[in-house]
Image 1 (cartoon, helix red, strand yellow):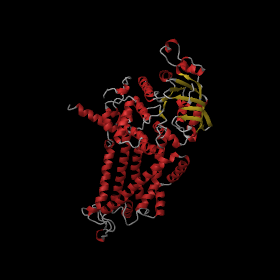
Image 2 (spheres, chains in turn orange, yellow):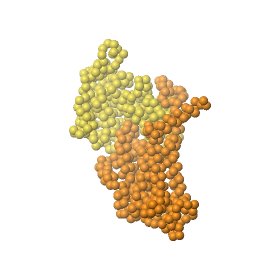
Image 3 (cartoon, rainbow over the protein chains, first blue to last red):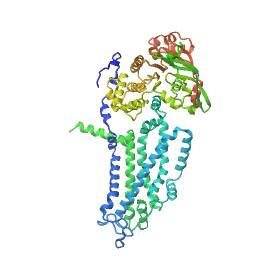
Length: 324
Length: 296
């Protein structure tokens, strides 16, 4: 570190040479967020699986060579084969194509719900604490929404709005936005009492700027984790809704309705439920892995990440210690 | 002591502050009067709970309105008529320019998720929104040099947690000085720092005060800080100012028994050898009860 003394402080031997936490400085400064994420095996595995599922949904219908709606009575209930990778259903439709197309619906709903509920929840959570009356009203409303069983609430809202893919997404956003609002609000209540906020106010920073430019970034890690969980949860609840027939309207496939279709022939044509069911489970597992990974990346004291770090350190030491 | 108003940066008359607790409002500041002249350093001393920090926050209008009430008159040069009755917009205009604040704990007074350059840039832009990116950067570098940071380029790209306590306190001081405030309120600026860094920061504050012609109100419970930087001292106890005068005079011949106790309880080189260190019998009973109530 340079030890040049500027004119201004020439008189006083200020010892700021010791100031920066030396050796790690340059390295830590370059440590990109992306790198932190890639250090988490859960994120890597989860992202890999999720990309595969998305690829299946997007590319699947094109490469399967079948149409998801074309009925072919001659080939009913065929087991998985080279011609039909996931077999066929009671109408002779190709299950692989239908699972892929169902994935488009399920993943779109998951993504929409995540975006809507995170946006709405963030705005409510950020502004709610700034006024006691508004805060009380918002929080009682969220209490009310949270106290409903999620799937029941989603069902009521979907049926009230009319069954469509977008309305299912809106209904599920009603379910998840309150949770986001609560989480954000509780962080805002903590953050705004911290001394840096008071310092910003003492410099004349407007409240809106403090909320969006200073407090929000401090809440962001939590939001990302919440977002991934919401994605997984939304996919599950949507499947539940479609399973009972309150979700994506027929004949459009969704993972939930596909499982429902196969339910009565479970013992003979197991692939009808196994294919959409296992893809659904994989997707949710992948998002949970990503969510956990991100949480650990932000909190390295948490055990699994700590173990990984320790292992890395140990591996490095061995590699360096060399060729003995 | 009281000079013409034009030389006063800060004029406080009969300031009273109540905090709302579950047991009802408790008066924590009981009609204090205070003034700070241009280029002067006034120290506000007293033990924990005597109302120093609450007073400092009220000068900036930072007390939350819903659970405190303030009465009296606070006038700042370049600020609104009376800070106590000013609107939030008036206060925002005043903060930073007429008066700015350095807080007690440098570890938490910087935004942990923003690099120093963003924090400085945001504060500079608050005052001069039309500066170009390069000009802002130059300004930021100048500010960091001003507070005695010799390698500002590196500090600029650092995250707060990469800086030592002393460096962080310098950065917060730089942030407070961006708009060239007429008065700087430093709430225990050195409490969280070790002794050598304390001395550096105090020296720097003194230098900046004379360079920028700024008034300084230091809040502290450390009599050695008072001795090294203050021109005048206001001794606060139990929400009241019990003694206010020239620093040397107050320290050398304290009039009020509380001040005498404070001065006697200062550690000096001869303390341990000659006599046991004295302590002050606590005056803070009501406020302790009030804090208790606040927690409940």
